[in-house]
Length: 178
Image 1 (cartoon, rainbow, N blue to C red):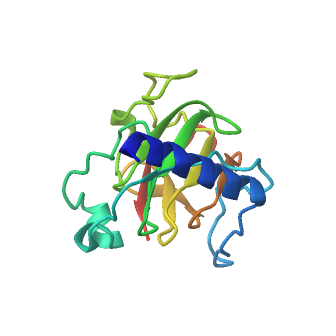
Image 2: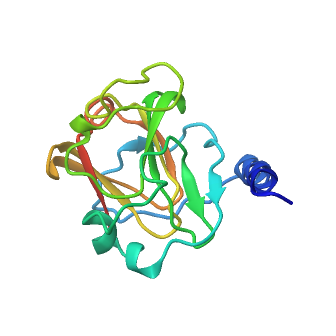
Image 3: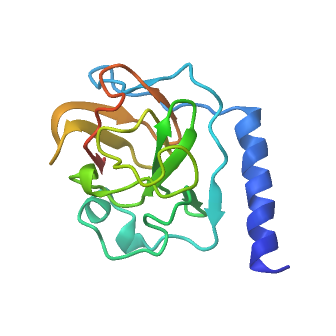
């Protein structure tokens, strides 16, 4: 079986899991929730072959860049066999339009652009995201309304997401992993 056939098979498998339902991991009561959790079933992730290395899976390494990964900003929402994955942000609600994927935290989303096909392709990610999904099964993505992790903060728990609420819709400018 070649790698393309394996990827297609994994997409189908993950799609089936997404349709079967997702159990959300709880957030601390003190954390602001940036998403409307009554949103639609998330889109299926593409599971990348191989595991992310231990050096690039801690929150600290993921927030400091930890090196360059081919999957960072590649236009694909990745989940690795290790359970680590991307934060994906969509231009429109309900996971529609163009999206951008981030393996590493980013202090300024204003210098990143939606790169997948769809409405909003080529637009800045900062202050232009309406829905999100955290494809990482271990780490929480903490989003902020200001650059360099300032402003109002909200958590997107592992393997959850939805439409941003009114505080965060078109108002996210940075995020890091916790």
